[in-house]
Image (cartoon, rainbow, N blue to C red; front, side, top):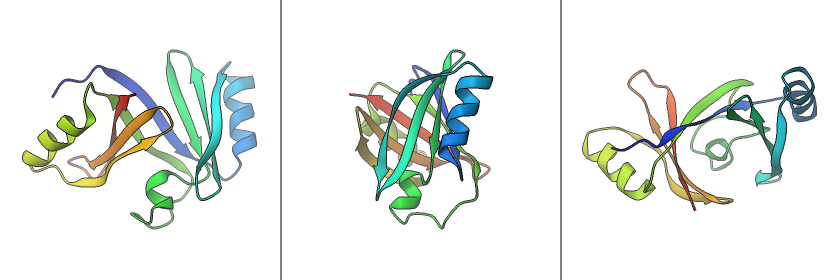
Length: 127
């Protein structure tokens, strides 16, 4: 499978305003976008150094009922791929367990798999 680049780290936060302020004011981050992640749960995307940090009140896989409510902290990390459907098919054919099938999230198509230690890895196609 071809990985184009490391894209982001996602964090669940109990206080999205405080998290946004920290990454902007303390670490010099730039707000890229914000909105509804689904079910009225807010998110923000920030550019910090040369990567993105997504802060979620509730991430999509929690909103969709695929996992129980999660504690605040680091959720997952993500890689950009040229074709999400091909990447997921290749991963599944190799025995990788799928957490969330591909779905559109803004201008991205995303899917999540379990890594070998139970970590969650997101694969992203930029639309």
